[in-house]
Image (cartoon, rainbow over all chains, first blue to last red; front, side, top):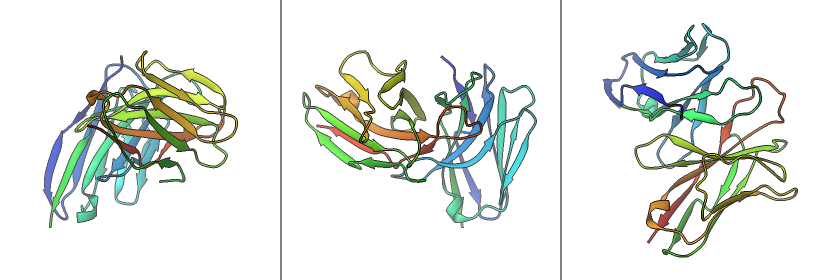
Length: 113
Length: 116
């Protein structure tokens, strides 16, 4: 089946630093999504990308949909302690409609104050 | 989490018992998805349902697992004769009617199932 490779697996950064994580796939997707999961909770949608090459921001978060449709990255600028959590990328298959999501294994972010 | 309600939040069962997990989607959403998350892993798709129909169950084990989304009431994920390997967090997501483009899935807070 389709798999997403997400890197890095974990990051330890100082408060105020910028963060970059990415996701690659062996096959194309027509939608890329980035979610954040806090302990004991469900994934919360951060950014949704629908067009190859699209660059979208949400506050301090910026994500891009790669032009090959096989990758995406997420940047967090000026990290703060509440950015701690697990960040998941997810791709949605090329078929139209509400198809299931394929998730990466996550990037675990720790912020040192 | 965007209105998707799951219960119970935590469920403990002994091996051989049945587990029933419930999911009420966001009001107005007619598409429900179930995902399973093992520790230190991403979410894995199990089953996709619309009202009274199973659309895609390719991620669901062939035995002991079943899902429904009746005309009235929540979606139910049922696991019969549970085993230790069923211990995981089970998440439900919902989205609006098909044909509405650019409508991402919103997740509930999950049910954490522990098998003794």
